[in-house]
Length: 321
Image (tube, rainbow, N blue to C red; front, side, top):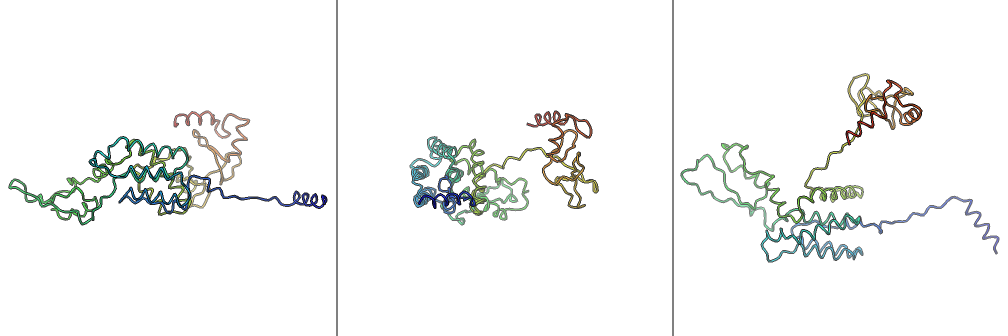
């Protein structure tokens, strides 16, 4: 009885290895199906928080129910005036603490949803047609050419731009007092998120947008990016630019598309470089990375001009950083 089992074990050892693949997505804090159903409707933030809590319940994320309940309480209007409610330090500190807690815990999905829901003022429950023109009360001292109609402060910026047709062209557009930045600052003034935290939260949103891009949820990604307030930081790095020997134009690619010729040649093997390359930031000579490593293991200067490439490059990188 023991012999067949021993032979079976030997056959398994000599056979092809077995690869087991497990789906560990349930162990992560983010969920693709939940991301598809989550809502960012700001017409009623309290109802949106309640709806997102029900989505978490349906997917078994009972640990998120108290968070969305707190968010619902934060969004619930109180009996205080609107200005006092939006400037309530307890609401702001509680909301920012929740966002930072989940961001530090790795649940960037919940952190970004909270940051998006409370980053700006919710749209008021009024139709677009409610934007009304207030008749000007002109006296005899006002010039008849200044026919600008005062606008209701509740009108959106797009409607204000459309209402410019009601004024005379005698007033230059350069004197137009309707500045979009003013309205944008007004919408941010009643946000429950401090301005100092917005750049950090925008980084969270961009990171979550990349996750949505990988999930092919492009509409959700675009919606998240619409809630960013600050421009992304410019990428800073060091790159070397080569020059085509035929057209004498600078190129950032290993091949000139116009001349159909390689533009970067290795200084050691004199062959064109199509893969990974390194070059000195001082003299500009370089080539295949493997060839450069082999050369500088035994030499301290450039093989072409005698430049101390390692020292000069280190000095330049220290200045840049």
